[in-house]
Image 1 (cartoon, rainbow, N blue to C red):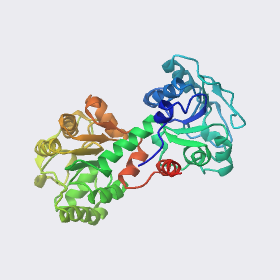
Image 2 (cartoon, rainbow, N blue to C red):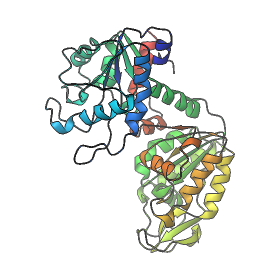
Image 3 (cartoon, helix red, strand yellow):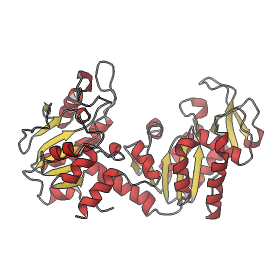
Length: 397
């Protein structure tokens, strides 16, 4: 995908003295007292801001935070805690500017944070008048918020239509590159791990991937539905019996291409869903009526790990078992370690996946960790994200 890259504008001196408007994703979790409990997104946004400052630009940064009501600012909607943390990370004060649509005073070499953009009326519905008003604030618009790239809003789409220059920040550009490498032009074999509680929430992803991947590894409740489709009994495990036909269609689509959906040959079961439940390893053909399948078995895990180590590209979305419970984490742990040890290019995304990566300490061994949940899933569905679309359009002139 061809987009203008902010890094190129900075390297060529085009950003010097320019007013730069950065849409970042600073939507971080907060405690009841407003303090930030996890700052990954703020830290991920720092390189773009530093790049702009080093280039001699006058820098404006904004983001949404939480779910404010448009036109009704409340103290809990404020980016004040973010401004404080951003200032600590940048080693300088970051002034917070409210009511900024009428104009922003900022000099080259300075950075200001513009208050919660979702408080502006028309932001969510991408109001054209609002977009034009924001575009007048800058010479260069930079989208560095992949987490919101699947939404066509004022600060993610509208402003990019009307700003003199619209480009991708380093975080967004890295996502575009990683997604292209993993899905548009992958090194084969291409293996995808799609796991989660429901087939219904991932059905379009499964269908889309079944047209492209060499191995489609399913896990969690999704695997249980596929086991039903393969004629296996799953006891009282979480599954969607009404989607067995859809699961069969995915299996057949893969088979027609000489690809496969590996069905578990052994599983880890329990009688109750609890951290202290007794875990029993069983053959997939021996699941009792009162059993709940909470993980893939060691034989299945070893087989999948061997396949992943032979892969050229791996896409990972979702743990394959209840990895939060020690007795049912082995499948996810083995797969995580196999991905870490594989020479394949790997891309991982989704909240539970990131939690598993952190739990097993393999961050440095995953090729690319996607910062967007919903946006990452829509990419896997084969959709073109609005933010990518408008930046490509602007690059094409």
